[in-house]
Image 1 (cartoon, chains in turn red, yellow):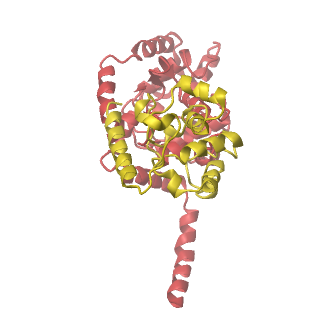
Image 2 (image 1 turned 45 degrees about the vertical axis):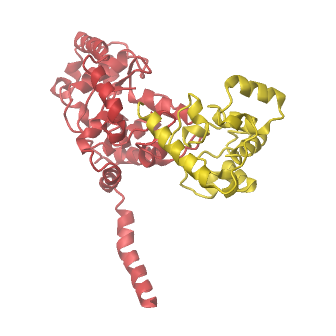
Image 3 (image 1 turned 90 degrees about the horizontal axis):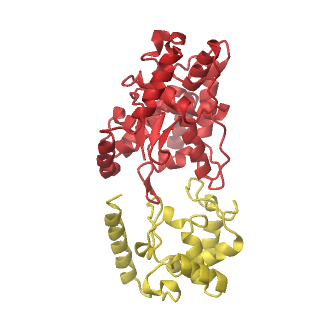
Length: 275
Length: 144
């Protein structure tokens, strides 16, 4: 018995340590996907682009959702985003005129030594043309222009480049944010969207974190309009009775990096329609 | 949304079964005597009066800004209200015969002490409820 125990301890040292050291983004991603595969074995990875409606428990809600999607309420806003985009010739600031590239946002900017979100690049472009940047980063014009930009990459699988150490550090910061408990109610993002995904909290079903970023900006019936992902983060933080951070704060940008990387391989589906 | 009644019916059937099997079902002397949760009006009255601790506790438990217990737990009486129960946590069944008031107090004050991975908020530690409110919720809990 003693021999077996010590053999196990040695094996643990040999195999356990490298495993711990291997907690790189790619193994994080594998573990994240495996968790949801186990929880929802019938749901394909690409299905998570549909958010809550990907889950078997939301089957009846999905019927209603599909009916709404026949005439998507977000259409007029995305249309106005497109007009704004064309009016200011925003395509000129982006690779491939901004078509089919949004799946790789947020990106790392080596000159700025910072994470740059899609919203920030839209404002960077406006500034480079001598225009005023858009102030409200949660809804309105910014949400509609971002929705148009990201919709031009619909169907493209999320793919982030974390090779820069600076980007990697923000990934780790976002990961920490995601798993840390906060607020008076003491919930982490993971409490609801990893451990209790698919369960009911009051009358609402909790979505899976897998694919969270792929539909943003989304149109929420509750909002009656489009909102950016940082708008949603703020709402979530308020619900757990934590002080929300500002849209485009370091915290939310890092969280977006982490959640986006966890959605690797899932196609964009912008704008998402949510309850 | 539409299958909530089904879930509630299923859960209440289970509750009824367990209650039926229990050796000594506790008598609910408060507003739940008819198996009903008190209305908002009844709650306001009970709070003002201050003598019916069980009703007061039930009112705090179902107040969204109070315990909001039904967000995660199912319990008897909810089916007569418009409140929708969650299913994150176990339903409240025979609480009074399974836990002492002291144990409940510990669980409400800071449930992470017993289970660091729990989803349950630390009602006392984070001052979500006052000590007095926690005692009232427990007075109500032990009648379930």
